[in-house]
Each structure stands twice: as C-alpha cells, then as structure tokens.
Image (cartoon, rainbow over all chains, first blue to last red; front, side, top):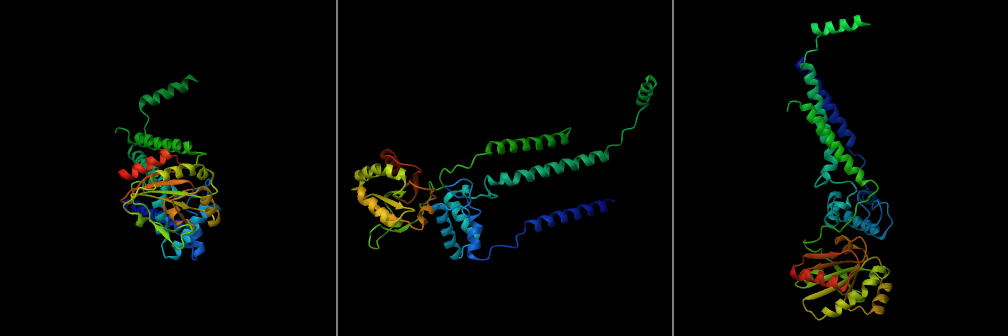
Length: 152
Length: 179
C-alpha cells in the first residue's frame, strides 16, 4: 500500500515538473539581429517614458538604447551580457521583469513559498485526519440525542 | 507547537496579507528612477569627438589625475539653457586650475545647433559630441541635464540629475577632490 502511494506521488511529481518544463521552455528564440534587438528591448524599461519598453517607445533614449543593443548584438554579446551591461549602468530598475537576485527574489519567491507552506499544511492535515479515529458517539451522546427526540 | 496547522495557516495568511498590502501600495505608481548605481564606482570610459576639434577627441583616461565635471546637455533642453550661466560662472572660476577639467557632452542634438549655442553663449570648456549616445547610456542618464563628478583616481563621487547651480557644481567638485 505504501509502495503504491509512493509511486503515485513520484508519478505526480514527474508530471508536474515535466509540465512546468515544457510550459516554460521557449523554442522560438529570436534568430535575426532585428529579432534579438526587439526581444532584448522588450525586456528593458524605457527610462524617459511611462511604463513602456525600449522596444515599444520612440523617445530619443529608447532609440539610443536600441542602437546600443544592436551594436552589442553585432559584436557577438549574448542576451545576458547585454542586459547585464544595462543593469550595470541603470541598476535593476532597467529590467521590466525583476531578476531572481537581490530584492527581485521576493516577487518570484513569495508565491512559491506560499504554495510550499500551503501544500505542507495540507499534507499535515491529511495525515492528522488519517491518524485520528472517527468519533464514536458515547452513551452520554446517545442519551442526549434520545432526550432531544423525545422532546419533539 | 500544539497546533502546527494553525501556525502554518497564520503564516500563509500573513504572507498573503503582506504581499497584498505591498502590491496595493504600488497600484497606479510607476517606479521612480533616482540614478543608476554609479556612485563610488569607476567612471565609465568615454572617447568622443570634440566639437569643431578637427578630429580631436576627448577621452576620460587622458584626464586621469584631475577632478572632472561631466555635464550631459543639449541646446534645445530648457533646463540646460537655464543652467548655462551657472556652468559658465563655475568654469570661469576654475578654468586656470591645472587639476581640474570640465566636459560638456552633447546628447540628442545636431552639430549645427550645438555650434550655434556654444558661440552664442561663449562656452569655453570642452564640448564633446555623443551622437550614438554611448557615453550617455554608460553613465545611466535618462535625459539632460545630468552632471557627474569624477575624482582624480577616476571614481564617480557625485551626480545631479537636474539643473545645477554654481553651489551645486562647487559641491560636486568638492566631492571629486575629496574622493
């Protein structure tokens, strides 16, 4: 029985991890220079406009960003290197999606923490319910019920 | 720990409440930029053509050993125009100091407009052109005017992301000389 339960949990874990892996995998990465400039620019904040990315803004700063991204792409820098260069100059502020480091971990980490705590609580509750025997009515309980019925 | 479930429920509830409160305070606001993490770091190098310099360039490494004020500006920005008298007065005070240098870096402007502005206002310090914005990006600027102080050892010791007064410039220079 224990073995069957363990196998069930393992299968469930494999399915969840597999689903997360395939759901988050990005097979259609940008291939051309223009695609990469657009893709990197879409992850960087336009510094002199409201809530727009470098890719979607037409301000002079955004144009300068895009030109700099293009130069770096053509120089063979990776996406990560390019984004790091802008974080070096502007700080984490420049990233539209917070990174997993520094305070950015709070955004990504808290929901996971809440999920883990919630799942832990559920497991504990299930275990307790399984351990504890069902309540059986005592003689006093039976007497109380009988008395209540007879009063009707 | 008589009731671990109760504590876990309180923990999760508190967590959700804290996140909710934090997020609710952010609704309708956009992040404020107060300058990049440049202070106390090595100043980004620049190597830019000097206005009407016949191919002369100015690069930061050639100014090593001096306290340097770098001012990002252009001719059409109103705050830049408003701070021009302060920059001129400050330059007049320190122009003969061999341990001091001042560079005005032009971002997002045409050479003709800059040339006319410099002539009209009699700017005597070095004016460099940054047509591709590489220096402006390296310094983490978001616009103009923005002014930075660099120590003789090449470390950024101060910055101001708005119009400067003579007093502001003196304070920036002081930070560079101390740093």
